[in-house]
Amino acid sequence: MNALEVRAALTLALVYVLRMLGLFMVMPVLAVAAMEYPDYTPLMVGLAVGGYGLTQAALQIPMGMVSDKIGRKPVIVLGLGVFALGSFIAGAADSMAWMIVGRVLQGAGAIAGAIMALATDVSRESQRAKVLAIIGIAIGFSFYVAVLLGPLIAESWGLPGVFWITGVLALLCIPMVIWLVPTGEILSSGDTLPQKGQIKRLVLSSQLWRLNVSVMILHMMITLLFVQLPVTLLHFDMALDSHWMLYLPVLAVSIVGLVIMMGIARGRTPRSLLMTGVGLLCAAFAMLGMQDHNWWVVTVAIVLFFTGFNYLEANFPALVSSIAPAGQKGTAMGIYASFQFFGAFTGGVLSGLVTDIWTPEIAYLVGAAATLAWVFVLYGLKEVSRVKRVMMHAGIEQAQLSDIRTQLSGVPGVLDVTLSPAQQAVYLKVDRDFDASQARTVLQRFE
Image (cartoon, rainbow, N blue to C red; front, top):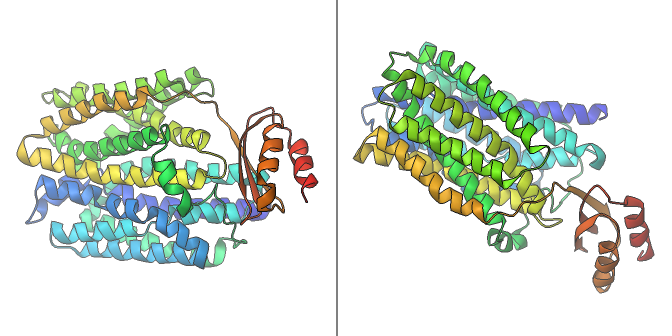
């Protein structure tokens, strides 16, 4: 990567980390810290934990499309401002109701698509995967740091302190975006951002809907876990500032489990390992539902949960990328992200509602039962090979589309072809046998 690409990767990754820290730090502490509010109920806690997911799900695709019209940086700055406003409202809240308003506003700062698109705009195609990989690693890193820092900050400054720090971090990102993040020419690429005309077809795709429902259930379960787990830990006389002593070794062991599962997969994503991940989540929730305040059962259950969660969270996006048609990855990932955030909202509501009506143990068992339906969803998923995506610029006309598609399909390694005369672009899904020189030769014949 050149200096511009390194700067783009590091600054955008930092923006992502600081923003996601704010969303994630609340999760392991809210269920306990919110008990001080006068209108506290488990349902209100569930809405507060998962509330951001509703607006994230609703605005993820529209915000990405708007960034195509008015530019990436204005959308990112606007999103960070809205996110900071929501954080300050939640920090100043004297009731759960106002905290939920703040959380919903936090979710309205849906800038993930615009950040990824900006990363694409300022990087060369040959280096784009590296830039996006750095940002992706930063997202995962922010989750682990947030789970460890959240309880410590909440114990020192209370739940309002978590929100105030979150808002300040978001505001610090704004000058960074304006002055430090490079600005590039907007590439309105179907492999980068959602395209309106593709949404209906991809929502109904026989393979993609299975992954969309899967990530919805996955994030439903992690939200359900964090609505219940902090309260469960109270039975072991653990103050919030000591929760990191459990989370740190548990996350470390679960990462070892993830590495083992990735090693077994050998660069593929076999359905059997996906089922194994779901099975680990099922076992974790069943154990938590029947643990009867046994410390070791709870600890093993959390290790199993995060091992399964880490594996599935790491592999689902790669599967979406492999399955989505050429030139339509941006739309497929936008839909996927919307389901993901809606799952967080659903998990919060479901967990709070079940706990309100029955008990926390029943909420855990509901999570275990959800995995049984999940198995049937994944059972119909076909195993696919990892693919590479290539975009080439070419002067193509409507009358030539059929001939170009036919000839490109005959190039070694080409798996799928999508042509866009409006963008003067050719999108290809290819495997390791792809011959780029032959593809360029084909395109030159039509210029």
